[in-house]
Length: 233
Image (cartoon, helix red, strand yellow):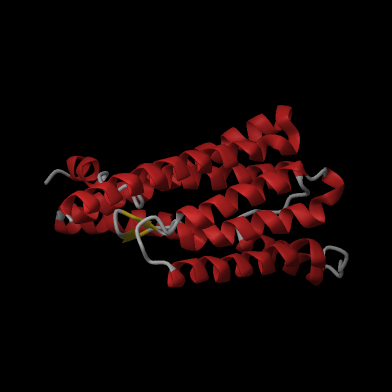
């Protein structure tokens, strides 16, 4: 089947649909831009970037920024732990609604914190992204990240090269899913950085709204699934 038609057909899987992944990836792009531009050049999702800054500061003998870059990493790890806990203890349809709601609450709380509280706000955004790394890690049952850009970029390039050589439509299918997430992230980083000029650190409210739409989609899909099960029984 044509890869584009296949993607459209597979959108019937509400929880791991592409539209859910796009909204989740967009929210991370907004958070990353918002944190970097308005909260002291700390990344919300890119813990590699935070560790890079930390390592460079230590190499230069500047130990004043250790906590600034360490706590977002540690809270990201905690987010992964919590997300895994959610997944292991509830593998039913709709299990992602709970952690997604937690993400929204955390984003709203962190957004309301003033710039003088960046030392708390940035780790909270790291916690959100750690949760999302587990909660939204599949698109159409395929492992793809809505948090990490590098993995999706690697997947896109690898699948494109394989398609050129093998002409397997599945490779093109996976390439399209991967590159859509990469472009979504980049576009929303630009959007986040632009609106941060006017909204300052409140720009991350947009990320909460995007995840709110995701929750609505997942709840609607769960309701349809439950109704179908009840009708069948």
